[in-house]
Amino acid sequence: MSDPIKNITDFQLDVLKEISNIGAGNAATALSKLLSRPTHMNVSQVLPLHFNDILEYVGGAENVVATVLLRIEGDISGTMFFVINTEVARDLIKDMLGTVEGEEISEMGFSVLQEIGNILSGSYLTALSDFTGLDLQPSIPSLAVDMAGALLGEGLMELGRSGDYAILIDAEIGIINTVEQAIIQNGGGHFFLLPDPESFEKLFVALGVQNHGSS
Image (cartoon, rainbow, N blue to C red):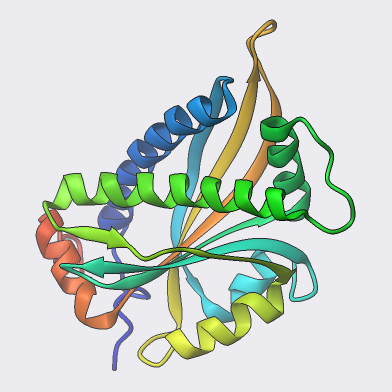
């Protein structure tokens, strides 16, 4: 069976990038309130990525990352991963709590990361819901810190029953220095969006771009 994500068109990717940028703007506003500091968030690229390339993209199977996983429920279903490396995770915890994490991330640090994952994922789903008119609800997200191979490998294999590709949404997160008005902290975060096979066509019908540019 043909993988719909592998065959996604450039126009459909452009639409998803536009939605992602709106979601990023909403997320930056929410993060600014959470951190009590201006933040910056920008989506650099949106593209299909084969499962075999995902682990390499996040730094390799042995790279330790923080991952938020949630299911999308409602009119369509799917799965979303948000992945950041632990250095960025520690910087975000430091900005919010004013404390420096040790080798092991503390329970309070976990709570901070889970809340940030909630905000980022929720902002994206809200933007997607506003564009499509679909009712989209996130499940309660789960957070884990471990090697990327352990966190993503098994999950992607389970989700790959009907396809081998995910939609990658790369986002840059920055905290703005209020004195110099410069971005003093940049870190990359990666969203991986995997609509369930039966939801993919429904999503793009709702966006009005289901067959646009397809060969």
